[in-house]
Amino acid sequence: MKPHSEGHPARSTGGTLIQDAPFAFECGATLPGLRIAYETWGGLNAAGDNAVLVIHALTGDAHAASGGGPEGARPGWWEGLIGPGKGLDPATHFIVCANLVGGCYGTAGPSDLNPATGKPYGPDFPVVTTRDMARAQKILLDHLGVRGLALILGGSLGAMVTWEFIVEYPGFARAAVPMAGGPSTSPWAVAFDAVARQAILGDPGWEGGRYVGPGPVNGLALARQLAMTTYRTDRLFQSRFGRDREDADPARSLDPENLFQVERYLRHQGEKLVNRFDARTYLALTTAMDLHEVARGRGGIEAALSAIDAKVLCVGIDTDALFPAREMREAAALLLDMGKNATYAEIASPFGHDAFLVEYDQLGPLVAAVLGRATP
Image: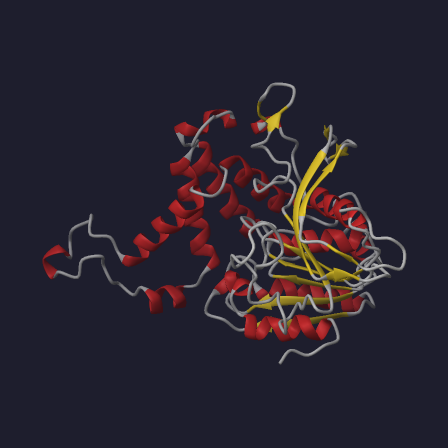
């Protein structure tokens, strides 16, 4: 889709942007071109300023909701937030979601073929940062004719890219809602990512990242299992699984092959990810999360945040063990101390970090209020 004509609204249902111009990464490396897969909902107004940019989390993609692209009616990962009468309503806003750079769902990433070798980039793909991701999102918005964002929002990795965007492009977004992800990644969160990456790197199928075929499926599955324990809570696991086993027969109570239901659940989650995700992308994106620090190269955190010219709603989750709610409270407090337009809201949920993907009854009204409207 080309940028809209002056005075005429534009509509799009997504596609792929192919940019022939080189794309320079923060690390200094360059790709000869850039491919970005995206989906959209609703129409862009004549002023080009009613857009909402949705940023996905670690293993997400551009399919945030049904009806935005070639996958049609299949529910998206934020189906409960995007749609008629919901927090993000296509009747009033042009909603955009794109697969992040480094991804494996249609946007340039390490599983792509390197034109110089004819083989996957693997470890030769440039080190990706959340700043690179924000820059690529802006390239897409320019392509779509967006002149201003009513809102940018995302959770976890999506929140990190949101922070980078509003710092890198002050005033372009009128409002921002980062959820469960602050201006920098804590050593606590880095620790979990580091262990998960070791599970992949230690799998014989890794082959230095140059594998062809399934690759390190056991390592990726294990990395996902570890991650799932940080995304949820002890309370949720207790209520959902307790100490139940696959076979309730007391005679098998000491049989190690009689899995606990929670073990079975985690194994299932690992298998699901292996069937839809690339291990090279998992390493690239978790590394980007760990490198996330808006203060880098900008003279410190206050100097970086001083550029922000947007209303910012920081959303924490009361049971989030990975990115504790206090981090979002502290980010909001710092912005307020700096004289910025900032507020804090907290979601109460037994789901932990993943609550931003689940608690639509709480999240929808928060997002709608930022946009100046109410949900039913």
